[in-house]
Image (tube, rainbow, N blue to C red; front, side, top):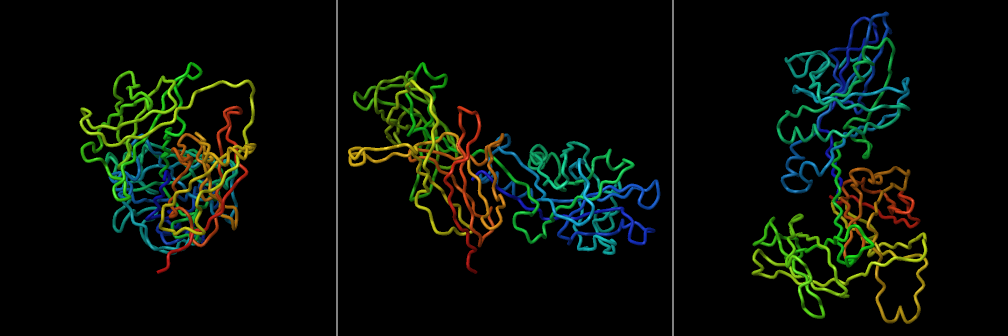
Length: 469
């Protein structure tokens, strides 16, 4: 799992806009119970010098992120990105285009309030434009903020979602170098002071009925494990990178557990020729390490003509051997022609439906489309799956084509497939998907010839069902 969502636990809109009577401003109005959040900047509606502003306050349960990091559910700082995501709410109000929103960290505590009125601002409660909590004023009307960092996003069409990388701020909240009072979202300072109107941008709030439109901080990281035991190449002058990586999985009664004498420390590997028993690693022993609970890894190059070797995993000082495995060696070879590969993909052991509370593993069998075995081949050998080293997935809701999880092929690679000796796979937390709907899964493979991603023709449908009470 390389995506984890943390949903807003408080949000509201605050404004100094004029009420419907065009005399009084709605500075005491609260909209904490509304399922819509709104940003605008209006100029000259009442007179030629008046500005009316609307801003968003939104907070998230950072303690949950801290707890998940302590439990190794999300990785350490530097290995995970945090994205602030707000989703566009269609409106019958005028929509401006080509504007920029700023996002800041709020520097004082505030109360969400229970107001609903977003038209005449009649619901008096905190937070509002003047008060942050009951009896406590903002130092500066309209919200107290840290001026740094400031995040910006351009809205060229006006209907885009807000999607901003706020990693450095979230990491400050986690570390405690800044107190978490959430975000303030507003038009940029230059737009708020402009003698023009920017009206209006609306987002769905945390009370929305739409599952995929709830405000969230989305943690994204590359959790793909690339276990090359099934695609292990001997060192060759044809390659500029001859390192191979293999893994050891320590399961006790079906559960991954750390090896007691190793814990999260180093583990050591020796590699032996299967035919002669000689040690094949130049430095005698390879130093490996801990990846996550019960999983260890080691990387090394192997200059050998052997077709098979044994890998043995040891404690410090080589006093205890934990496991002996086998590796079939592939010889790197050049070819006389260039070609384009097409694939046939099938899902291994699919289920008719998945529970909303489970984390499911999807494993794939992949072969070349033009593979044409002889009767002898079929009768004498098992068909092995191909391993695709760079593959990614997306999930689409069938009913309306909504992209529940889009391809994560950018800098974070958060939808990359893992692989091991049995082929490609990934784990999916079904909590990311709304239950009682059918979904369709698509795969894309990186094509090194065109230096681009190529979506595959095979796709797979599955259903997520709500747990019975």
